[in-house]
Length: 115
Image (cartoon, rainbow, N blue to C red):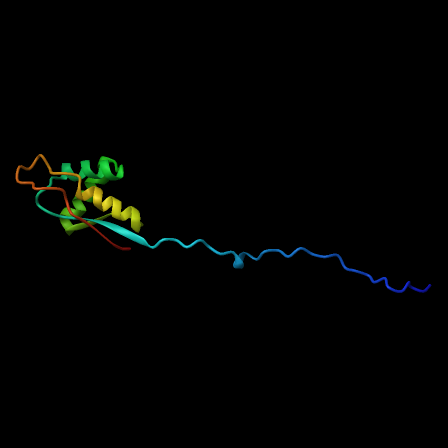
């Protein structure tokens, strides 16, 4: 038998599958540390209360961080993106005086630094 002219055999078309390596990952913001600085104008109770209020840390975690800042002179209290780190630093620095120490002149100091 002879084939009809103009007819060709076509193979079924395959849909291209996306490759996982081609998927773009969203850019993550670089991490920053919020660092609480030590001073002699604030009690452990103040630090625990401030960390509970600003970060929601339980008293045990607040005590651990208060001990670190007392012994090492500084403690990383949070690692996050820059905007939130700046907010938390501001909240620490505006928390107010420690009423337990009459010579206390203000809030504790904090800085942010790249993690």
